[in-house]
Structure formats: structure tokens, C-alpha cells
Image (cartoon, rainbow, N blue to C red; front, side):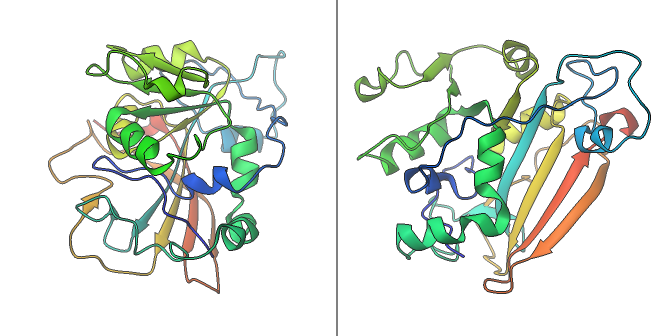
Length: 255
């Protein structure tokens, strides 16, 4: 499986990011998710709600879905200390191979359902520097940064929104009822602490790095445990990568 030189930096970036450069299929088809009593800030497991046999009392608008989709080493690192992704299988392979293997983990299907991507400054800077030939995103990007005053000139005509001093809650409220893809280690951590993440798809690459940029730094903590419900696990026999999907049940979170 080809994973490409995905834009991770000091805060990390998600798995298969630069596949945007190789996948040109239509991304307009967006599935509708239904749930019961969903409120922003009270994340409910949408995957569980979709499988519920109880009929809704009334037709509700689609809930907001906030997804994490990221790869780590077996010891929990998302990149080397310098942000390098050379340990990812397929990082030195052709874009054609990357595109061919992307369906093994449902990347195209996942991205087709996404309405907006949210990331921080470090992740943005790496993506921008790694994609000098073409901006890799075909979906709107919300950049959260208190240090960037304006977007780079080459992105003025792209669908990128610069936001400063907004909390995860406020960002989610901006796109209520849509599917949000949260990218970058620090962004993921902040959205989890705020109780806004609804589902996580984690790709474990069979390698031990020993040191690097962790998805969850030891000096970061949550207010109580965050319970997850396992949905499915798949193994790619070619690469040995294990993909696990979970829904997040904030309602059962301990304090």
C-alpha cells in the first residue's frame, strides 16, 4: 500500500494526505447521517446511532460529525522528530501506485464524505511547503492560527479560511451539521478534550520508531477517560497495516 509523503509536522498530519494530488475522482457525493438528540458539544457515536433500531420520533437535521483519520507507528508516533514520513510504506513509491492502493482502506470514500478539513499552523506549513506544485486539497480548509496574519499569496484563490482565536467548539458551530475532518496532533488533542470528536480511524504501521512526534504526548492529559466503542478492524496483507475504527462516546466519559 502506498501512503505517500504525507504532510506531517511537529503536531502531525493525517494519513494519506497527499493522495489528494493523485485522486481526482468526484468528491461531491456526501452521505447523510441521522441521529437522535444530538447537540454540539455532546458528541454522540454517529456510527452507533446509524445502527440503532429505534425509529426517530421526528426527522432531525444531520448531526455534526467530527472525524480523526491518522496513522501511527506501533509505539504511537505519527512522524519522526523532524517531521519525516519515510517510515510509511509506499513513501518512496509512485503516485500511480498510491492511487491504486488507496481504496484498500477506504480513503476515497472517507474523503468523499468530508465537508471541511480543520488544521493548525504547523500542519498547514508542512502541507504548503510539501505541495509547492499544487495545493493538494479539493475540500474547504479551515486554518486555525493566532500567528499568521494572512494567507500565502499562492493560496488567495483557494478555499482556505484563516481563523484566529476560535475554540474547537466555535469551529464546530461554524460547520454544524457537516462532516469535519480534524487534522494534526494538537488539533486532534484539543477536539478530544472538548468532547467533540465522534469517530476515530487509526492506522497502525508495523514499525517501532523509538522516538518521534507522538499522537498523544505524555505531558498532555484529558479530563477523565475517553471511552471508545470498537466498530471494525482490518489488516492489509500487503503492508501489515492494521486499520481500526472506533466511535467516541463522550456521554460515558469518566471524570
